[in-house]
Image (tube, rainbow, N blue to C red; front, side, top):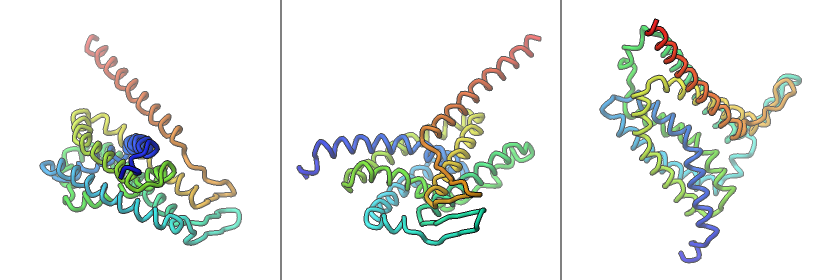
Length: 258
């Protein structure tokens, strides 16, 4: 153990913990929104249990990827339609693409649901069982895990360092999950912002999956959305929402004075 506690390993642990925290933002947002589908009295339990199970599955996935990383990159099937589409799908790309489609579908459905005023007071009809919600959250967490684990593997090849960072990241998520959920509950207007953030996450996963599959459409290769671009788009969304909210309040005050 003394050899394991080297300066390099401790530095890697600090960087990986920071990486888990940063990359866990979109995951935490998804958990907070998805847990609302469970019965109200069990939502906090669903969040904690889902994150706990997700951490366990992340460590298992880490172990599997360390042993079989090459298998996830080997082509499963190819699609070649001259002038239209070229691709070589592997397991990693398929998981990313399916995850992106699912998140975009979920966020779009929720946005359309919010726009239907007749359904605002009927949300309880669409509650799901605790098991279904937990299964959905854990499954999507596995999708989110791929990028963070592969990024971790680029920084360290020591299992205990990566596993410890995952556990610390999971503990932070459990600590923040209820607070994020309570904030969204008290500030319902930010749910729309959160859903659009998830929509962008879906686009990012689709672009990453297309890149991993070497996908070309009409001769143009699909390039992945960089993290810098992702955070820039999120920053613009947040700034737009803040300006819109302040402007709306100003208009309401002006109407009150008039």
